[in-house]
Length: 430
Image: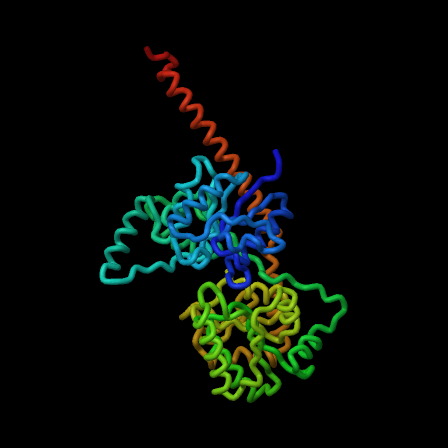
């Protein structure tokens, strides 16, 4: 048997603007190192991305476009089809959830839920629509967010345990098997080759060698608490005047783009001016992986103040931990009321500028705390690496393929028996 061939279905393969696409890119590359052939199946406009094995399968991801994608995918020499599901990855269309019904019978389908539990029914009849979906979910006929993908997939994976909780709650009548596969850091640690990275990074930013750096890394978004972070840095600078904030990441994403992205950037710049730190907050825009790695290696602290808390499915959080940066991140609302060490992260309550100020002062002034956070964070990030994730997927694909082949053989034998007219007891009918 040759190398197993898997098609990774990602609607918008734009790693610079979408976290699911970035995950898919890492997985595709690592699967090849793990002995699989991987092909990214995406929209036609991304098919010319250099350095990747990509095929365009449709122009759009509505029902008609998904039908077209299914026809194209069915003609590809694939053993397994793996859908990387998130609303943003498919232009906020649920139609990709019809894919298991549109592919040839017997095609093994795996689904990873990167985002789940976010669907809401609006309007005057929203309650009735939710009730109707709940009834179909109890009968395991369809899912409000993925249509039939969740119930028809041969394997269902999630990147966060809370997604599995939602699946189990919705399908409580017939419990679906869900496997949690954590993500890995999305920025590899760059080789140093003897370079004095802290000094070089500060020089590249036009900063003095003794400047203290707090870094936020990731796509900019209104729910990531960046205005509060800027306010907190302004307060901390009264005690640590050498502190600078570096906001590293693109404003353009599939969730926030065009005029909305420009307005968000202007709003953050206005916040910095209002607090008198416009000269001490640096917006880098999108950076290449090696540049992000060097920035993290130079940072005194990494800060992720998301409004809803930061989970382990944040590639940016894991990247900071893997680089040994003392890391501050928000907890889920109501979990904490003060800075608390939790598994290598100094957790703070969300939307609480005073707690964020306290956390920054602690990390910048307490060397023992910073060292402890760095060591524990590295250990946490090392639990799941991309080679480990790729190896898990390769073994899982092989098992799914064996099970599918076995089921197809059983169905074939049943058809032969039915066609021969053999009855129970071995006697042939008239």
